[in-house]
Length: 256
Image (cartoon, rainbow, N blue to C red):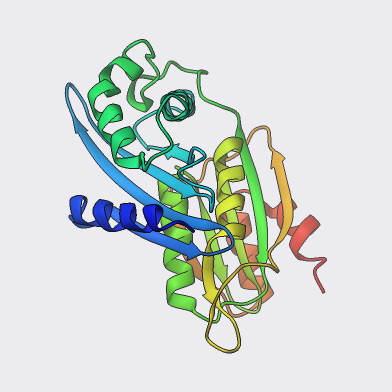
């Protein structure tokens, strides 16, 4: 990775130094730099935005990869903001540009969302995206506390609800927009969330996607919770409580 990118990280961490404003997630010579920035834009509405930037090793000679999420904005709005940021980035000189993009977003935030009436609080009935369910099997967690914290954070940032089941099996059950579930899978597989047998940070390479599907007449899961279980009977009851017994029977009960 370039010295310019590393210098930019130092500058950004100094500028955005309040609690949870900036978080470096990964720094790798192979994949570049991955970090989260949080911004509170104050106008007619107070909107908390999470912006995930990935700076490839070629950066700043290429634009950063960007992901935008917010509990207060619709997926359509987040995608529009992301696309606008990428378009702006493509017009800039090949110099460190993240801070400039953040300032540009702050200056143009109202205009970017002005013509879209899809704030979560005022969405018309039937105007939400279709709800999907996904179920993942995680082989192990060596750095358990850090791993769980990452799963909770990603779920919250992406507006996903569900369960993390901890016991003989480690299962992640997610409910929400398909785009958000896809983004979660990307994070789960690209961010170093655990450690290997030597204690070195590593990516999740053994996660299995057991199920990823749209479900009709779905019971809404209102929050993301961690549930520990001692037996498969307990686990089955947890699935029953959220109306997903069939999912358990088809994808969990058949696991070796």
